Image 1 (tube, rainbow, N blue to C red):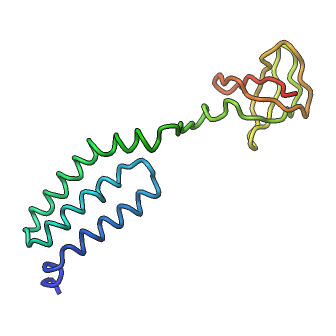
Image 2 (image 1 turned 45 degrees about the vertical axis):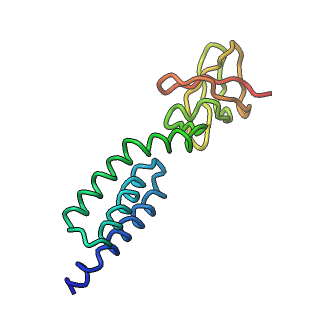
Image 3 (image 1 turned 135 degrees about the vertical axis):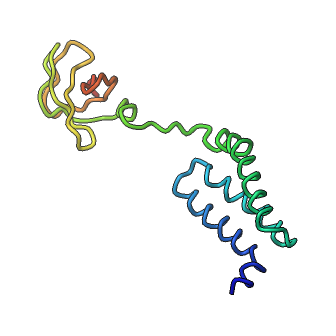
Length: 149
């Protein structure tokens, strides 16, 4: 059994490449893909009866080269217009409804995507319950909103 695996190490490298490609689908940051690409030269080396140690070295070197040279190019061209906002930055520009009247110069509450936020108005006006608003700024846990007509 061990002799079979030693004689067919290319299958191990093909499996590593395939598994890394599948794992890359879950992340999308082109990091795991570099290991998949690094397994391909190791697979080719295994077909020429190269020692396992040499195959591992080829895998490590090719993966590192991909991380430093291929990944930045892939990120540059494939994520060109993809700005991934997260946490608080993702709230800016979102729309919600007033759940507690926002008094002029005071505070109220706004529901945005199921969350209730303490809110203040960007202009000196009162916004009644049920009005649609857009978040323009976030300061700690207080959102600044403007009325949507």
